[in-house]
Amino acid sequence: MRVVPVGGALDGVLWVEVAAITWESPHTPRLSWQALTVLPAGASAAEVAAAQAEALQHPSFFVVCDRCNRRHPLGWMHGPGCCQSCAEHWFGAVY
Image 1: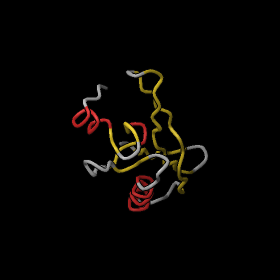
Image 2: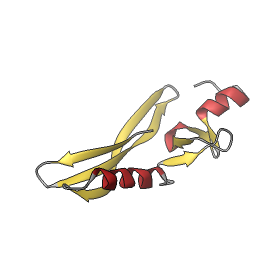
Image 3: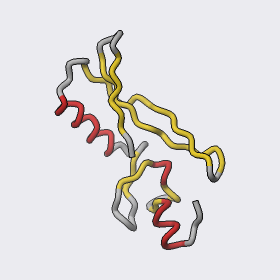
Image 4: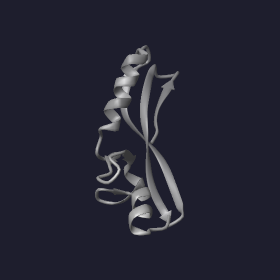
């Protein structure tokens, strides 16, 4: 799970980006960074932390596994409500 604040020196803003994970093949993940929030360049650490916390609640990028109750990137889910780790542990899936 990764939320990255990226500073834009030329335009005076900070982009809070999240990594969207897709799979090219069963063993080849691909990350694409997507801007989720734009903050002013002078944003405080607390404002950046609040934007990161808000990003973690965004269902297009992060979901909670029904089995382990941990938040995971959407691309690390085996299916609705079950993360890849739980699928390996409980159902014998291989990743």
